[in-house]
Image: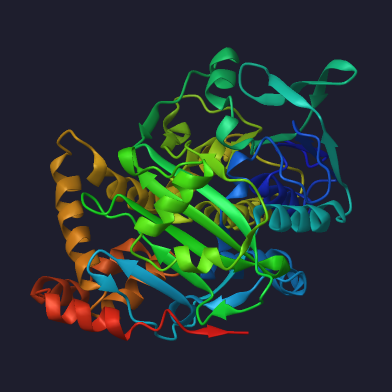
Length: 455
């Protein structure tokens, strides 16, 4: 039995902050150990992807609001726009523009620094929650059956901290596999799929305050033909954030002239929009976009007193926008787990069972991301993946022409419905009977009101 006196969370990013929120309901003390020095709303080295576009999906926004009532309004007060994804995001597929229906899928876009700093402020206001930044965790303190704390280094040197529960939320830079192996519990198997997608982002001021009639714009990569695309959204401060994406020879550049030329070659009307704005940041590139999953749930000996969440155990290609929502789901799962524990603490073997819960939680997002990314692989995929890819390609061709299919896809994208709903007989029939045609595609494209502007 692990008592509810002290919990330690490794990492004060989004996953760590959400975990600390629910831990504070049961533990007397929760300490967040963060490697970076945290200063206000500044970008930090430990989150290199923070310069790129972020948004809370429809379901993710609901979950965060459950944990932090009024949080969405706080972001809105800071200038982060809230909008219906279907009606306010213009989406370009290989075969044309999707329709713009009202869907009830309410999303919010912002810079990562605003979201994380606002979340951190709320968490640190909770009783018993403290933050120690500038602390590098070196490893786990453990005995034969359990993790009993962490070893870390701060400005004063190396220290050991005992805890009833350790949560690894250290993200993409986690050393969890090495720590487990060093502590004698074995090394979990790792699955990695890296298709080499690259990003480049830039923030813009809009001095004219004249905006398109959409809030966001997206062009998805589609294997094998659409090798470059991007996302645009209004964010707080009356600014616009542009994130370009591409694969192999279609990766976006970082020098000014090549960046401008890249914009002109996109099939979405971004270049003219950017020409009316003023850069508010340098061009920031990012290429760590692999999908990676540790099979912690299959480790023969999982220690009591340890839980791993977020990118520390399962990370996705950021293009699919699943990370924040998965972290919110995991936090709600952790909350339910702790509520089911007896008053005296966490029973023996419970953290192993919970790690299996998290594995089931991440399975569908993992399959959705990797199934799409398999389309870029040069070697032959396994038969089930080939079948899934074939269906997904047909689905993508249909969406510009079928509102029912498109809206169901959006519900899956926003994690309101599971991916299995795309395999419902009614959806499959619509996909299989569709025959795309040039006339239909051109008509839809000509009807898409992208050139309009508003104040």
